[in-house]
Structures are given as C-alpha cells and as structure tokens.
Length: 625
Image (cartoon, rainbow, N blue to C red; front, top):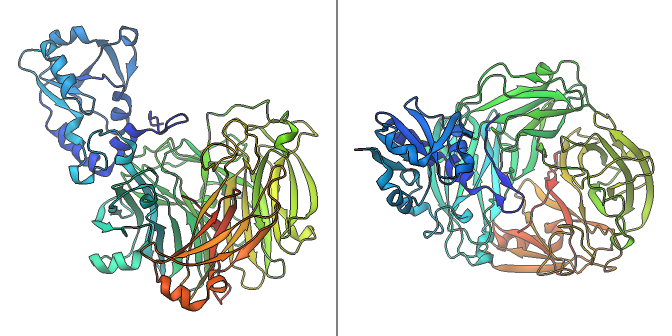
C-alpha cells in the first residue's frame, strides 16, 4: 500500500499529496532525481519524506534521512532511519535534498550544518509553473491544486462528454482556465492543452470527439487530468460525465465526478447478472507503477481477495473482467475492490447485449468506528440518517436497490425501508433486518405498491446492530421494454432539521438552521432530453412545501428564465427542462446552458440524467456548488 495521507477529516484534502502527485510535479521530480550527484542526504523538516518516497522511490544514492525533532530520531520514514540533524555535517553527503516547499529560509538556517562543498536541492525545483498557480503567496494553498481525474474514452463507438459550470465565479474568481492532460491506456500523454471558462458562472463541456479531432488522435480509452487555474472558494473539480454511443448505437450512461482522493478500498461494485459482463476500469492515478499483487477483488465479506498478477504502469488504464477474477460470482453478490491507494474512484461498465452502462464505486472508509449515539438520537432529530433515492414510474421502469457496506468496520447493517409517493405520503415501511456484511439482498419495488416517488433507507435497531452514519446503497433502474439500465449509489445524511448532530445536516447557508440547495442540472441535445428527480427528504418535520425554483442559465452564466417547482415535505418531483422552459428558452441558453436548482429553505437531494426515444437513459446523483 502507498504510504500516503490523502485526506484529513479536519482540513479536507491533503495539499502535500496533490502537490506531489500532479503530473507536472512527476516530470520535475524525475529531472531532480536525474540531477542528484554523489551521496545524497534527505532532510525532512515538514514530514514530506514518506509520501515523496512512496510516490517517487529515491535513487540508491539517497542513503540517509535527517530530522530536527529529537523524538523522531530513530523513526523509519520511506525505508530510511531518521538521524539527528546535528549529524548532517559528518554524513559525507555531496547533495542535501530538503523535502520542503518554500524552502529558502530552511536552507539558510541549516547552511552551517552542510557537509563541506555540499549542494542543496529543494522541492521548490518541482513547483508548478507560475502560470498555473492560483494563490502565488502560498504554494501549498489548496486552491493551487483544484484538480481531478475523469474517465475519458473515444473508442469502439462510445464517446464521453464532461459537463460542468464555472462555479468558482460565484466565489469571486475573476478568470478561470483549465489545464488539461489526456493519458492513453498505456499512461502516455496524448495531448496537453488549456481551455478558458466563461467569465461568469457559465457552463462548459469537453467532448472526446472534439478532442480527438482537434489533436488528430486515434481511438483511446484513458483518463483526463483536470487542473482549474484561478480557483476561488472551492478546491474540488466537480462535473457530470456522459458516456454515449457516437455511432448512433443504444448505449447511454452518466457518472458523477471522481472522488479526487485515492483510497485503499472501494465498494459498491455489483457482480454480473446472467447475460452481463462487468468490467472494472482501473486507472493508476500516479507516476509510480502499481506492483503486481497489489490490486485485488473480493466478494464482500468473504475476506478471500483474488489479486491481479500483473503490474499497472504510471497513469495507465486497464480493464478487469470481474467474472475472470471471481468466476461463478453472480448478482446480487457484491464485490470489494482493493487498490492500495493507487487510484481515485474507479468506474465500472456493465454490458448486456448491445447496451452498456457505466457507474462508479465509492470510497470504503477505514477510519470509522461505531457511533453509540446514533441509536440514541433524540426525538428532535426524527428518523436521523436517511438515504433517499428515486422510484421511477413503475409502468416503464423497474427500480431495485441494494444496501452496500462502505466501511471496513461495518459488520452489520440494521436497516428499514420507508417509501413515499410524490405527494410526500408514506405508503410503505419494511424492516429489512440486521443485514450481515456479506448479504445478498436486492429489493425490487415491483413488490411494493407505489407507482412513482422515492424511498429512504434508514437505521432500525429492533434486532440490534451498529451504526456509524456511513450508510450506503446501490440503485438500479431497468427499462422494461428496451432492457436498458442505469445505476447510481450514494450515502445517508440527516436532512432538514433545526437541530444538529456532529456535522449533520449538511448544506447550511451560514449558521444552522439555514439549510439551502444549489444543484447543477445539465441540458440535453437534439437526441436526448435531460431530466432530474428532486427529492425533499426530512428527518423530522420541516417546511410543509419547498420553495424550489429552476433557474435556466446560458453558457455565459446569465439567467434566462425561472420556473417554480414546489415539492411537498417527504415528496419528490420529476422535472424536465424542456417542459419547464420550452424550446425557445432552451435555444437561448445554448449548448453550454444549464439549470441551477435553488431553494433557500431546505436541502433537496437529486438525481439527474438523459433520456432518448430509443429506450436509452442515464441516471446518477446530482452535485451542488
């Protein structure tokens, strides 16, 4: 496993990790290593040595590690035993590598401790070019590394289109541009370019067909690295990614933005059903190879991982056939993915006949513990943690859901299903039991009498069990006529209560109880219409009806039109921009227009997608900014 810290629960993403893992930093470190001469001593004032050496194993000439904290002398970092900084003068080093950024003062302060004639090298030599820095005065500011990866493909009749908006403009950003690098399946750089975003909060897109034509590329399946330059207020690159049939075929799907932080394990990967092929797209997020035997698949709860017997190159993409690694395993069995912190959230692709669908797995937490406070939540928090998801119109769609363990410590899941119609009336309640980690429950809503609406997975401790608040599920939807399917997954939160518990509810505008909603909904095109299912979940009583408004913006971020969509508490609504605004307004919004779902009174949760006239559709959870 890579010895890297990628996320800090208090501070968010680990900036040092992002600074080291950037593709341009990887190129620069190779140059620095190549230029090291003689015996090399590594001084580690800021605890950067371990991630540095994990991501970029040092040349054999790096033989000694020095620290200034006496309590750390003798500790092992990156395979080197730490020595006292005061021993540096007699080390005989010809080069001293200081593992720190903005290291000028540090170099000055240890100048008198350098061995005679030693040359000093610092990590300032791997800094990004000034033109890519958003906050010049502080290199390790998180806004300097507003980055992410996207699965990107243009091959075998399938293309990808990334869609988002310049939401940084809402936080005061004056000028935003994207620095982009496309890697092919072998991890080679196919193209590097920049794209200016609208000055205001306008929409933008990146289509694989356009990139392929622009750079004269052949077919590719790889990943796109995205770096937002000039970011303000938000260091995460959020997007929706459509996979569509560019040869007029039947496939259509969408996924949420990748989680920007590598994890040791991921969960929520379904085993193939009869007649299906499930492929996990494994994409190395670093310039260091993934060693053979590191990646593994395991039936959830079995603890019998099957390892991948080959290495995966830097920034490379490989397709892992789940059935080949776990023969005989069938839906509704679940698969756990182990990657040793080498990849961000992977995608998986399900093929059935001529149709494919693509979705993502989720980070499986390894830092959670059982929370004894959850079973004893006070009545003011009502039903507590809720996981809302849509039930699509029953006449056309089959809706299925499956609870998914999403933490290594979750050995059981005590859960109940609450079902609501669109008007917010509770029409059914089913206790699902205290499910074991390796359960194979998949609930089909054909057995529940509701035409359309939504359901909420909640904790229920009548048969015992434990909880940590990290409750997840997979949602699958099938068109009864075409056979097309889509799936999504997400986790629980406490929704719409005046009282708080730990960091819940989320989405406060200012201090509690100022709950609000700001969700992004992309528009369709000449072949496909966009839609969303908006859900108003409430753990306890809140406003009887929402004050939801759909705001149509054009590609420059200018408001074109508004449409109210009142939703009953515990209710839902299926919205279509072409119905809410009409063809003329959508034409005015243009190809990069979008809808912002706004509500200043409550937090909504939503799922969005596209739908065509040939039985194809996509669905995934929405993102907000």
